[in-house]
Length: 343
Image (cartoon, rainbow, N blue to C red):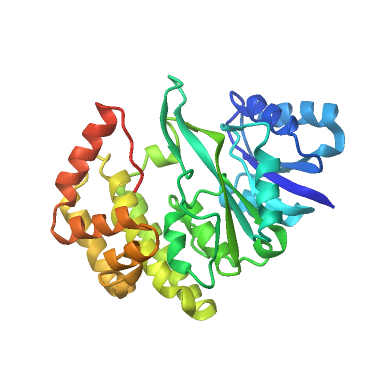
């Protein structure tokens, strides 16, 4: 058995793939397998993978398949994984030499189902770091079953986490896979069966922001699919993890009302006011507890080392109908001042 199986879905990444693989093949922790899924990529990604397979042998596993998207590619990687833990790395990113060892050590020390590390968000073209994230969490670990509200403090990207294989292999499935926010929903399906979450408060990953990435090309056509997937996800929670329902409602506010709306606002054809009204109507129908959710209230924040404080401020801004002006100021801060605060 390997210590960690690292799953790398590959599609049109020939320009970045070698940098990613080199960073993973020179880790300070032994016992790693790299499961590389060529998701029907039309470029030279498969040739690069075969080149590395020839050089590194059993350390590299190649799954060559037709294009079905990153969600199914990751699921195929999970099925093939032989490691005690499973990690995901996007092929246009790269990691520090201690990435695997630090996450594995944290997971073992806290007997954690999930270990989370910090990362730098970096502009691919200029090399400028926008932000350093997930390093200021005020606790070393927590148990999802005892403190589910703290999950809203954890970013939902898959690529800065280590997951216990026995937990992730039990995750459910969505019939409707969304075109955006898929990482977030993938993570929610894992949380249903998870317990302790541990943290490595160091930046171990360089997450490269590309202008042509899915998150930077969001438009209103993606909204129906996101709504349908969120309904399905909520139904799964109500059936399999009703004790986490209040957490999911808080997460829905964060990711639909704030994050998704911010991404949609880049679409110049979009009527932002109508979109916000539509979001609120959807939330009131499908996640009616979001307006009075205790996990995103000031009282909860003050009793939990200021956890979710920014989110509780955002709910206040949203309730006062000031989210539009807030977005304008936020975009100015990012575009002109080059400062990025994650909410």
